[in-house]
Image 1 (spheres, one colour):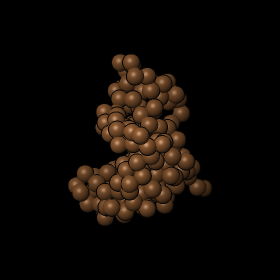
Image 2 (image 1 turned 90 degrees about the vertical axis):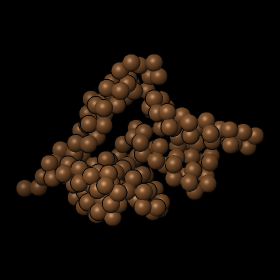
Image 3 (image 1 turned 135 degrees about the vertical axis):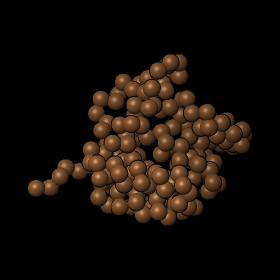
Image 4 (image 1 turned 60 degrees about the horizontal axis):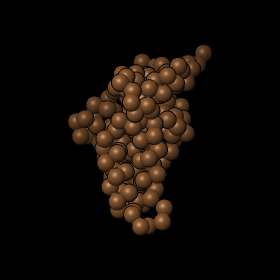
Length: 167
């Protein structure tokens, strides 16, 4: 008997996404926390442990170990968006933009509302000199979660940079 695939527990999050997207919502921080908590649960204790180990390695600055743990996670739970997003972060921090972009694409395929993946896409495109692509990604992230000051700052900076340039 095979076990079901690991999927983030994202059923019933629509209300939280609505609260998060409302710039005037006083409940946005709770909504964000609830969404993140749901995204971090694969439904498999073993897969959740791989995610935790990968995140701990990232926190310790060990991108090689993080990539190793998170690759095991994506191999065993290919439908778990947060595994792909975490590995994208590890690849980005290791300066491996190609693999990071690939993992972001997979994250967004599985969870199109992943504001963190969109912000990461914006950061990579910005680093690569694609200001227009970065601005589009940051705006998409901000539309989902307008309480991200760093994303708002990036949008403002890129808008100033691109002033007078046809978008």
